[in-house]
Image 1 (cartoon, rainbow, N blue to C red):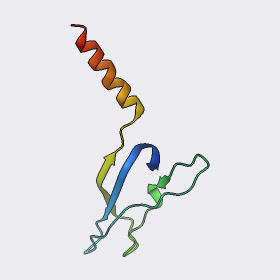
Image 2 (image 1 turned 90 degrees about the vertical axis):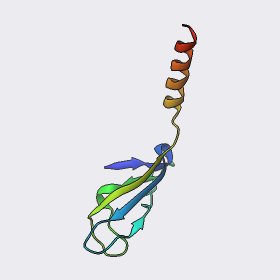
Image 3 (image 1 turned 60 degrees about the horizontal axis):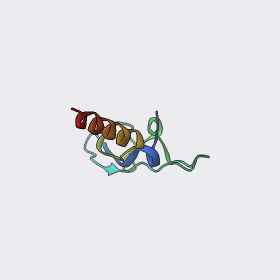
Image 4 (image 1 turned 90 degrees about the horizontal axis):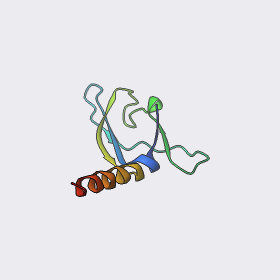
Length: 81
């Protein structure tokens, strides 16, 4: 799975769940031609122990233009009542 971090996410934190390891890290984006950071989650490994057993423990989603348009449309519809 690939995630375009610059376009969608403000922050992504992964936490290792292997044995006694509880390392947390933010995946480093790979460069691509669009200029956005792309995170290849299927390749992520814990930087402390190398395990691929991790979970997403924190996500902050950036406000997308489509979200703002939907919000304006809802506000506009409710003001016509």
